[in-house]
Image (cartoon, rainbow, N blue to C red):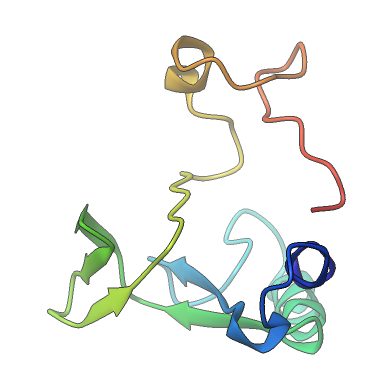
Length: 106
């Protein structure tokens, strides 16, 4: 995303990624050790991981969290668990046969 920002002549430092996790750790379905390693990798890549909070709703770039905090967002992608949301099939995103959104380097 930061490389794409450079191409678009946008300040890459302005790109912030926050991962909201409603649980107390990542990858609840597996060993805690794997969740911790995943979080370390994401943090190293510049992702801010926030546990025990949910996104409730977004209106005009203001995302309200379950604890009342508000985040200002340019793009909000909501996912749930490890399975793709079936609603993705109805909104026209390119998908894999398993229903996952196809993304590129950006």
